[in-house]
Image (cartoon, rainbow, N blue to C red):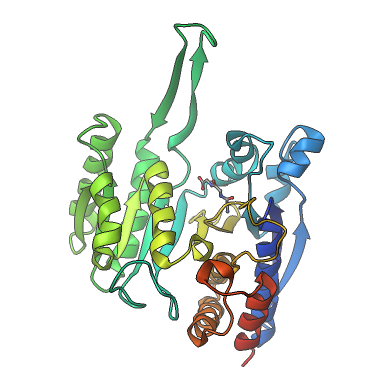
Amino acid sequence: MQNVSVAVIPGDGIGNETVRAGRRVLDAAAELDGGIKFEYTEFEWGCAYYLRHGEMAPKGFLNTLANFDTILLGAVGYPGVPDHVSLWGLLLPIRRGFEQYVNLRPVRILRGVVSPLRGRNPGDVNFVCIRENTEGEYSNMGGRLHAGLPHEVVVQNTVFTRVGTERIIRYAYQLAANAPRKRLCGATKSNGINYTMPYWDEIFNEIGEREFPEVNRWLCHIDALAANFVLKPDEFDVVVASNLFGDILTDLGGAIMGSIGMAASANINPERRYPSMFEPVHGSAPDIAGRGIANPVGQIWSVSLMLEHLGRADLGKAVLDAVEDVLEEGRVRTPDLGGRNTTDEMTDAVIARLAQ
Ligand code: GGG
């Protein structure tokens, strides 16, 4: 029996509703074969905690989380707490502290979903974005001088280290080498951003030429790449991008999938020295929080990625197949997909399908 300890951080807003769905589906998957069991410890960290205690999580929270096999997160951010405080108080220290340098985000039109892209059907769009997750534009370095004065100056540094750049690009090549068409696109902007991006391009080409000559590689400026996500999404197998570019591209990825509520992500420490973390791409959605209508698919797909990471790709696939079967059947849908069903009803339907 594989016993897996899971630190659960529902966070804020709809995170509380979607995380419950994720836990229920994990348990249902575990029941399928009896070979894996999940033990959960839930942490009430996030914006409500911040408003009570002045911090998003207690000091030493990374030491607490380090004792777990894996982390399941919902969403962070809520009105009343500045977004940079909620991100830097909880989510980003976990990604950086546990060297979860790979943020893997699939982009796929699921069976049964109508994409807003005209003429694109399930099966036409199926690729993976690999977002650098620990440095780049999210370096947390910079400063503000002469605050409030007419000559006020604000500086934000972007940091690309050799280690950080090589490891994310190499990870993306490894995925591309195993993809059917062996295609890797690197997001760049080396025409305008003239130090870090040419460096990124250099490493992209060096690793490709030296270690993965069989992979078809090309670099694309981020502006053109964003357009191609909409115009030619079928040309991608794997896309590798810096922290900020990857974040923006994958929200667009969610949109072309039909709803950002269905976009999933895995924050992976490939060396398995630290726990990895699984979370939907979406945020806390204060506009619909508490109404029980959030789409749980992004969270459920994230637990499918968790199962795969835990060595149970079979169960991960069973979960995603169940989601697609329910969507294809079309009787149960949350409002973002034009339906009238609740988060719990969608989750019930996926669990029922999984058990069949
Ligand atoms: N589900 C995680 C979440 O709440 N994400 C909100 C967000 O703004 N994330 C920023 C980022 O991923 O960099």
